Length: 394
Image 1 (tube, rainbow, N blue to C red):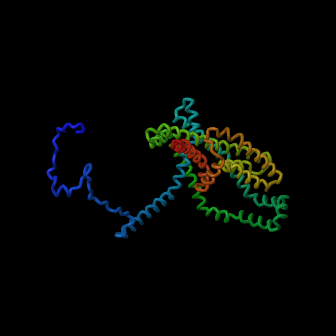
Image 2: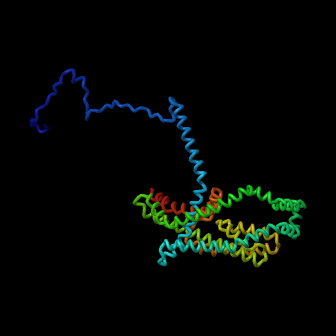
Image 3: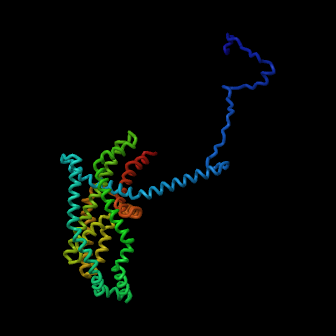
């Protein structure tokens, strides 16, 4: 030891000390290393194997055919999907009215029955009052169309146009009149009488399907929302439930607002045609409701169409109508819309235009109707789910 006292622990000598074995054995510090005899086999991807090209090609062909079959099935079922979408949005649109009854201590089933009964009475009453007059006005429009074109050709506005475009404008209008007054051409445009009849039957059956689906969706709307909440993780279900409630309330408020604004447009158009003495006021009022229910571009589109049709009657009446209806469009945009759409989700105007264009291109009228609430729902999900996650990252 260091203080000179002998260490009581005896020295242990290795049996191999001083032999050739000791010289041949290297000193090892720590536990001996374990040598693995396992060698990893190279991973061979299935589609990169060349030893069975027939099997690979067969399976890839089956996959392509399966994808084509799924796409074909989706295309064939697209009409059913459209019916379901229409019914779901109709149910969301009727939900605020049903909740209004529920706040007055009316059971949901009875509230649904009252709403559908009132809706059926209104529809039957409108059909009873509007359809005969509408048919009469359409018949009168078709019968008087040649005289209307002649009056247009005798107007000062037409002579002004003829001075700009030349005398060929008169022959062009005459050719267009002859084409439109020929029943064969109208049938050819519509695809024939049989196709027109089939289209009417399809529309009627589709309307009945939408009504039935809407009834089921309205009655089971709470259960549908609860089922969607179950897809979220348990810790996220309160937030998911809150988001679904916000989305459904926003969509319902938006759809009810669109119907109210379209009805206001219809009343204004009918009143202006009646006061100014323009022809077919009831027909133009119905046309106004059908066009202006399209968000954003509907009122402007109807303003253009109705003004052009008014030019066939009188230049002064068309000018007065254009000015008055343009004033109403401004009142609707800055006064009525903020009040009616107060419960809807606010989205930037640029996204409204983009969403309406995309929806109209993909699904036509249905796409244009649902584009804005779908865009608002996507914005809500981004604001409440994606952005908070991004803000939490450092």
